[in-house]
Length: 225
Ligand SMILES: Nc1ncnc2c1ncn2[C@@H]1O[C@H](COP(=O)(O)OP(=O)(O)OP(=O)(O)O)[C@@H](O)[C@H]1O
Ligand SMILES: [Mg+2]
Image (tube, rainbow, N blue to C red):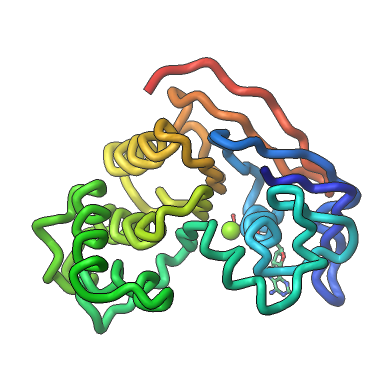
């Protein structure tokens, strides 16, 4: 579904984050991207979503080389991804409902059709009773769940979440991971960057660990959620 072939990445005027890495992620995988702060986890997610181009190598999404895509095709590619950013990027001047409705309105989906989908997404993350609430009045965990609702409202086949449990306590973190696992259980490929893997040691996953400019892929850990 996503494959990296000999991908190297460095930002201008800095050292390589990784060199010549190759791995693939299959449909339905639940993948954790691990590594120390600054190792390149967020960058790896941006490469996967076509937000940053690699310095060299090829990244294929469903056999399509994203570096060869016409710029006009990028928005269509992005729709396959539900992105949860490290800092939520919620709109703080709009309520929960409007935050979740935004990706739909960008796709031209409005009115009753949109409202039904927004409420279904809010329901899945347990925030249906908060649709009128402004993000600032929500707890950290609720804001994170709102960001997840916004990411899944377009029914993406891949959800990419960057430190979705950052700043949350153990209970709230586990709730977020269980929520992402529930999407994975219905076939969504889930890729999560996280530095504190101890939090999720009970969930079955594959890991991509970034260290010393290489990425090591490790098979699924046994576990139950
Ligand atoms: N747009 C950019 N331009 C130049 N350098 C960047 C850019 N984005 C990130 N970097 C650098 O690349 C390195 C990796 O950053 P990245 O955000 O991918 O790390 P990370 O593993 O996600 O870290 P954290 O755990 O702190 O979120 C860092 O040294 C960072 O300063
Ligand atoms: Mg990061």
